[in-house]
Length: 211
Image (cartoon, rainbow, N blue to C red; front, side):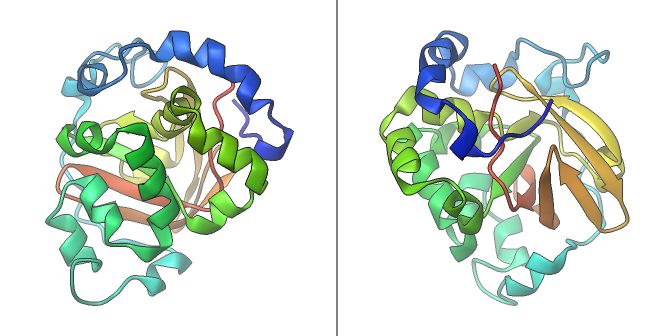
């Protein structure tokens, strides 16, 4: 699967198809995906939850995270993922999009997930008119956001050469080693961030579903 820049995607044309695949998206969908977490695993989302790795967050973007308070790594670890993200100024566009799509409770209530979280700069790569249309179209917005969520707390080792089913119904491919990883063509700028119910990898490009 290839990530495509939003400027080259007929996003609004995808809305109808995505609406069909996302009908009923919500908390139940997190427990019962249409696809396995990997191509051959066959495990459910609930069973795919994995223990949190002890490895610390890494990446150049981590230096911008406050040392103390709700927005610090310790503070984020105490909150469920959507709430934790709301304390990080670099994720304010993502948080606003999650709220518009009505996914806050779904994400906060999920157990053992991984979220690939685009920064504000990632959303800024999308032309303003296109982004405004997406934010106004709940079904399309939901499709894009749920394409950033996969089952289980993925460790850096899992991302070395991975292929994971997303809540949206598509797949994302990961690769890398050490402190350098990519999700499709998005670069991880701060990885392995713990929240109460999720592991977060902050990325520099919005992942666009192709189905």
